[in-house]
Image 1 (cartoon, one colour):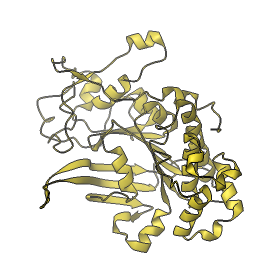
Image 2 (cartoon, one colour; image 1 turned 180 degrees about the vertical axis):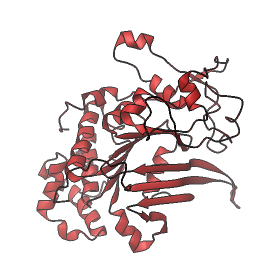
Image 3 (cartoon, rainbow, N blue to C red; image 1 turned 180 degrees about the horizontal axis):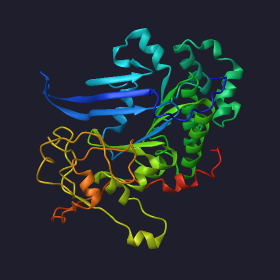
Length: 383
């Protein structure tokens, strides 16, 4: 990556860099002490189709436990996949073994949520960088000039090479994690909650850093988060996950201006507005009903147990496919997994009156870093 490659503008009509088809990750539930047996499965990811184009930033959002982090790890082959296909650059990663898989992994790297837990406390920064280069047979590039270039690219002083993780702040550790990913010259970076463990004042700086290195090195991002403000700031397209599946996918601005799935509408209604006058008059959707268990998901729509627009036909028995809908304001890339998306948008189906069951918040912490995203445009790259 010594020769900088400017960011390529995503081309939706071209071949995707990453294409996932029908991805499933089911974890076995085992019982017994002496004789362990499988008594069921947790459907962490349950049939996800997704495409990411070169140079694009794809944001994946959802509540805690929806399967978004498991999906990211499965894409990188860090978690065993139950079923499905993962094409990277036209090659199905699930068919690769040994040396062939190792060569491909160089091009797919990850930035983890916990910057301290993802760094070896017994290794200096220089040792971390060189280890990745050796593993991918790039040791010849581990020159002092190359190591200094990596630190410069993430805004760290060159004296950091001889230091250890405990000597840095949280924001600096995340910068080291980003530089470590860059050291093997990847094409795709999966960033799993890259700023959620950081102070709000530092979050904006790391967001800006991710955008800067993407522009300089022509990277493609899959950014996983539960914070809608952060995702809105950085993403070209957004996918919304619920209970192991995608329920809506659209360009970023289109999704925020006109959400079509009931769950997405509930998520966005949970984000407070900075203008008190608009905050008092905006729509707020409180979800009622039980949150299903991924061990035993509903046979029909996964959201049917909490959906205010639920209908007696189809919702309980038929799982909706993620499909393109034809409604005003929705482009060809706007896909929704809802049987009644058009009718709900047109007002032909109204939400039912809430029952006596307690309301369940749409998402915990969806607006937790709104201040960070708002400040990201002006924040510097220090910290």
